[in-house]
Length: 353
Image 1 (cartoon, rainbow, N blue to C red):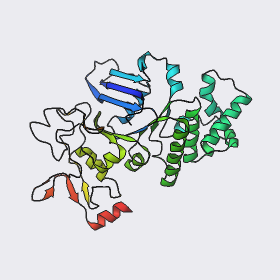
Image 2 (image 1 turned 90 degrees about the vertical axis):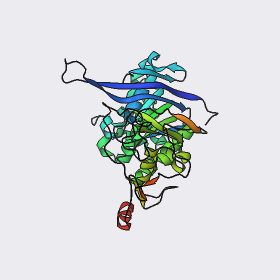
Image 3 (image 1 turned 60 degrees about the vertical axis):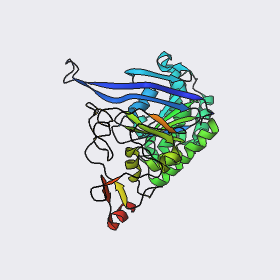
Image 4 (image 1 turned 120 degrees about the vertical axis):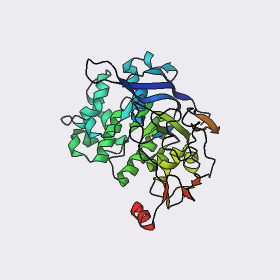
C-alpha cells in the first residue's frame, strides 16, 4: 500500500452533536460521535470500517462526504481541504450507496429518471444520449437496458442496490462511500453485489470506504480495516493481518463473534464483554474501552488515553498493552478467562446453524 497515492486524509476530525432539553435551551452537553480521528485513504483501495452500533462509523462516513459539517480538524480530498471545495464539485467526485436503496429512490420515478437525475442536475441535456448513457450504466451493473422503464417496486433488493450503484457511477466519481450496502440482502445476493463492486473498482480505478457490521463481508472486500469504538479508531491494519493477528482486545472480541472459526481463535471460545457500551455523551477517561476490557490495568488504562501508534508495518493500535501475534487474553480466576465463556457443544452448534 505504501506506493499508492493518498486520496483522502483526515486530521484529528471531531464531530460533537449538542444536547439540548429544548429548541431554545442552552447546550447541556455534547455527544462525541467522532472524536479525534486521523486516517488516510489511498487511491484505488477499499478501506473497511467496522464497530458496534453507535461507534461513529456512519457519522465518519458522512463527514468524509461533507454531508454534515465537522466540529474541528480537517479533511483533505486529493490535496484540497474539503471545506474549500464547492458542494457541486464534491458531489461529482464523491458518491454514496446507502443501506436501504429503496429508501433513497422516489417510488414515482422510473429507473431512467432516477439514474439520470444527478446528470441533469450537473448540466447534462436530457435526450437520446442520456437514454444511451443510462442503458450503459445499467448494463455495467448487471441489469438490462429495458429495466430503465420500470419503477423501484418492481425490483428485488439486490436489483435495487444495483440501480443505486448505477446512479452513484453516473457522474464518474473517484470515490464511493458504501454504507452497509449488503446488510439487507441474503447471503447469495450479498456475494453477487460484492463481486460486482470488486469488478467495477478494478475497471474504473475507484476508491471505496466500506462501512459494515459484517466482519465476513469486510474480510472479503477490504484491503485495510479500521476498527472503531466510541468515536475513535482503536486498530487499523491490512485485512489479513488484522484477522490473523489482532492486537486490540476489542478487535479480539469482535472477531470471536464470527460464527465460523477464525485464525488463532478456538471454536468453543467466545469473548463476552462485560457491561454496556458507555455513553458517547460521557465517555470514560483514559482508554475508552477500559470499562469493558479484560486486560485493563488500574492507574494506567483508566487514566492515560492511548495513542494510535504503529506496531508493525502499517498495523496501528491504540492500546497500552497490545497483544502480540498469536497471544490470547490472559487467564485469571482459577483458569477461567475474564470475559471469556467456553461454550457448550450445543451452543456451538446453535451458532453454526
